[in-house]
Length: 90
Image 1 (cartoon, rainbow, N blue to C red):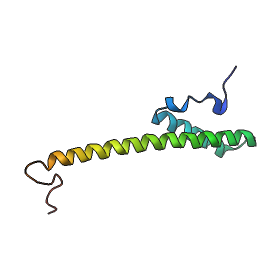
Image 2 (image 1 turned 30 degrees about the vertical axis):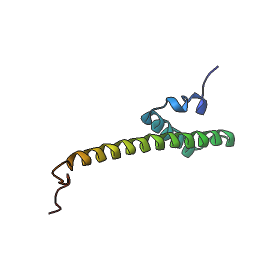
Image 3 (image 1 turned 120 degrees about the vertical axis):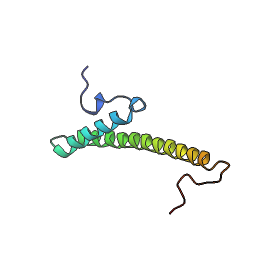
Image 4 (image 1 turned 30 degrees about the horizontal axis):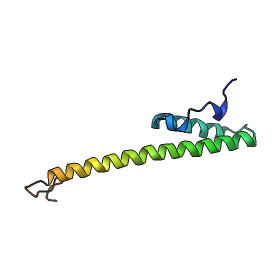
């Protein structure tokens, strides 16, 4: 059995951000190029929606990690001296 089109995709939970992004780019290119049947276009659209959600989850997770690191850094910087790590605003 051969794998073609959206059926060749890896399981969603196994995709890293870059893999999902690259596959999403390919899906968009194929949809923009046209030449597919309605059924193929719908399958591509659905796969694109799924890939978009995967990318969004990765980006949301990255944002949460950055926010946590910044909050931790800010707490460490405000220690006993009470100073702000961002300076006095001069």
